[in-house]
Image (tube, rainbow, N blue to C red):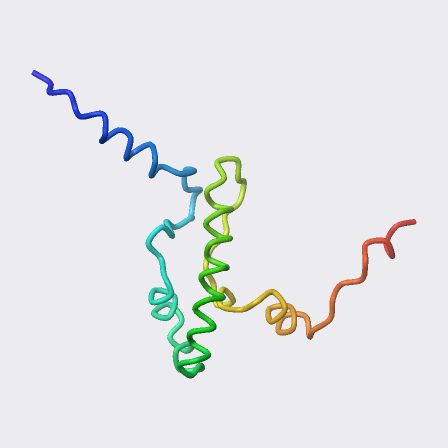
Length: 110
């Protein structure tokens, strides 16, 4: 004989189920700054305590953006944590583009 499960169990599952993971996407729901430092150990050595705290704040902001994107059920690609997740947009641009910004799109219009 089947015993009916309490309805609260179903509510928990429906609340916690986000968008399905795409192939290759990892679950970042419990991923935090300590996991990041374990994945990229040179980060811990590169920063002093005050800078490490600042990097954690930047990381958490970027992680929230990653999670927000990945929670979209209509997504066709996923975002993930990488060695740049503790950088601001300006820092990333400066390191990856030599600090230059691309020309405005209007230059390419004819």
